Amino acid sequence: MTKKYAIGVDFGTESGRAVLVSLDDGREITDYVTEYSHGVIDEALPESEVELGFEWALQHPNDYLDVLKQSVPAVVKNSGIDPEDIVGLGIDFTACTMLPVNTNGDPLCFDDDWKQNPHSWVKLWKHHTAQEHANQINNLAAKRGEKFLPRYGGKLSSEWMLAKVWQILDEAPEVYDEADQFVEAADWVVSQLTGRLLRNSCTAGYKAVWHKEEGYPDNDFFKALDSRMENLAETKLKGDVVPLGTSAGQITQEMAGLIGLSPKTAIAVGIIDAHASVPGVGVVSPGKMVMAMGTSLCHMVLGEKELNVEGMCGVVEDGIIPGYYGYEAGQSAVGDIFAWYVNQAVPDYVEKEAESEGINVHQWLEREASNYKPGQSGLLALDWWNGNRSVLVNTELSGLLVGATLQTKPEEIYRALLEATAFGTRKIVDAFHKNGVVVNELYACGGLPQKNKLLMQIYADVTNRTIKVADSKQTPAVGAAMFGAVAAGADHGGYNTIVDAAKNMARIKDETYEPIPENVAVYEQLYQEYNKLHDYFGRGENDVMSRLKLIRSQSSE
Ligand SMILES: Nc1ncnc2c1ncn2[C@@H]1O[C@H](COP(=O)(O)OP(=O)(O)O)[C@@H](O)[C@H]1O
Ligand SMILES: O=C(CO)[C@H](O)[C@H](O)COP(=O)(O)O
Image (cartoon, rainbow, N blue to C red; front, side, top):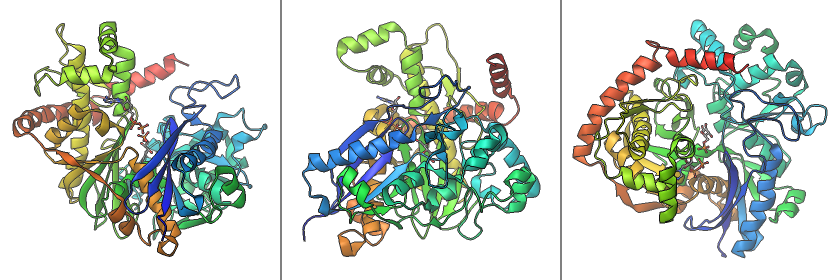
């Protein structure tokens, strides 16, 4: 039989990339990145005078279609592979990245009547202006003892579907009324490929509080929140929720022609980007935490029971690998914090030296920071530059650096920021491990493990665990391609289960990061100090960060 292939398309924050993968061994034959031409829309609507407020983050649905139209034909062409041998395609997406659509499934922002209204656009996962709505959802759910709340670590995030939908209802009731449905971008893009709008159980479970047995929260709860939302589940969130690995159908003739695939290609239902990384690195059993490390960091681990863990993003049965409870936690900025430092705060001389050596500023800072021992800088930071996703679940929190003196060097601050993110991860690992969701070893994927060895060693030392690294540049896309192979099925050259696909296709580097005992000891001391700052600023003893944010938003009105 001729070799078979699948395509995984990873829709990230700034760009989308297609990867063509061999189904024999997971080898990535070729990939192609398409930058979103509108990027993250955070200042004004495209071709419009309408300005956006503080912490808005929108996207343009056409950018997603451009990824399909540019990246997919490019990987087919560059590989020279016959499209008939590409049996499946899967996509993964950031989430909750959601949009209102009309009865035809078209985004409201495509309509001239609606495009001047910011609420008609795609709200990106990091759109952070629905915190007040999230707070009210959480308070009411806690007061009513809603069963769903512990499954989300005791708090729903402002990044998720319910807070975003309620914000739309509150601030633009006309958009809420006009919308036939609110859908995840992952599901919308699949509908553009197949002509069928299905909701995948992964985004529905983690981001829209859907449960395999219980469905969405009761109408009573929605009614108590806001009587206008009483029937949200049957109206704006209507439609079948289907398990991961389901085929959404074959690609439409029209789309197949447009993007250069065979009309027989099976399309998998979508999955969250981070979650696709789990089979992508070959993790299909408990005890192994997968860290998708990029602009943000998502932590995923499988368990055999549904347990409550403080501040986790969620536990969803079959949410990642069928047969297991999939747990997720996360840090809403990691690479983004380093980017902030490099772009906003590094002195000129560092940029000049890096440039004269032909390396980038990250590489320069990493090299210089490697000359320090743990604790030597006397610095300690809190990693909340984009709020805290786990375990505090509060987007009002902000960053902190203590210990700076007149002698402090840029590379010491850079190192303190790397360490802060590692402490944030340690907090998450401990929260799971101590509550019965065992974490014995760590698997890292995403851009950061390829870029920064010091960072990875610090993570191994701070967590006192071995870290294995994906041997793939595009792990979520490889995971998505695996789901594409499952959608095709073994009879058509794919696989029948995601476990079979992962066993054959996932690849891990030989080199691992092992904890260094003397570093582990110093970091243990620093972590205790981090914990004190964490609780002081994060657990209500001192809410200066929330007050500053309030003053800031009042002052910018
Ligand atoms: N050498 C480096 N060390 C640490 N962080 C880096 C380095 N180079 C780039 N970054 C950070 O990596 C992040 C991008 O990660 P990547 O995984 O490629 O993106 P994404 O999360 O969008 O998929 C950026 O936030 C950037 O600041
Ligand atoms: O919340 C998410 C997963 O649950 C987002 O998809 C994720 O944080 C986006 O990450 P990145 O920009 O690093 O791909």
